[in-house]
Image 1 (tube, one colour):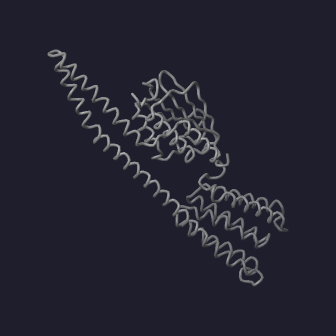
Image 2 (cartoon, rainbow, N blue to C red; image 1 turned 135 degrees about the horizontal axis):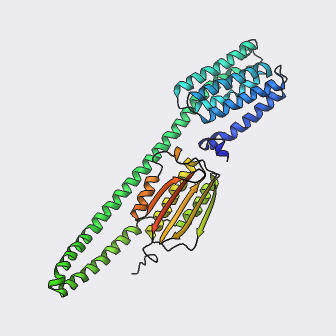
Length: 371
């Protein structure tokens, strides 16, 4: 549930630091003797927390407004409770660096400088007294911190985009390789089957014996084609559905999402291609849940209904409204279409997203390489 209180993409980098900072701020303020009194201090701390929470989730002008308001609260606390409160300005400096607008960052840096200068003026030029030599470099560091954070975040985002572009390029190259292999390997064989089928159709009334001979050639050529397909498939990396489900459980557990796997009945025996395609689709769906859903619970249901193997994946997250474009649904749909199956993505009852995959079962068992 923590991701609903704190952005998931920032938990790894900032959560621990923010929690410690807020705890120490409350301790310093409430333990200091202040003319504001307990009620006044609590009200300013409440204003600080409200500003912090808004700035934590927003990246637009509202974030800048919240940061300015929070800095104002810190300035008042520093005037009455002690200049050490200014140390906690780095909390908003950090949040400011996560902004997407350079204008917001520039205005926020100016607000940080104004906060220090205001406190210095109220406390008799405290920044430039030898008794407090540390505050001036702290002000400079807080003014530089948003720029540093902005560069780090920008670099990380660009690296993510580069990785995504490389992944897409690899996928495109793999598709081209498969298409080329299919064309070069199966094109001639399938053309031969087509021609012999036409010949058999012509001979079936005129010369049944010749038609039978042509059908025997078609059968032999079909076996060659089947062998070629198996050779092509063997070059692809096999993905186990059971292994993918176990990996999904580990991934979701790491993301703080509870996974419930429901298997109704014995799973059917699938071909290597079918199992790989379904496993990859499950992987894509689970990855989307981790990246986009903000869910706390996920259910994967597997069952066979009316000669179809059904895989239903539901979560209790934000639903389709905040799903980003290009989130892998298209690739899942392509895989299911390749298997003559279907993919449906809908709102889940009670919120969240429901993904339903249906694979028609045409064989009783896996392909036997010996046949």
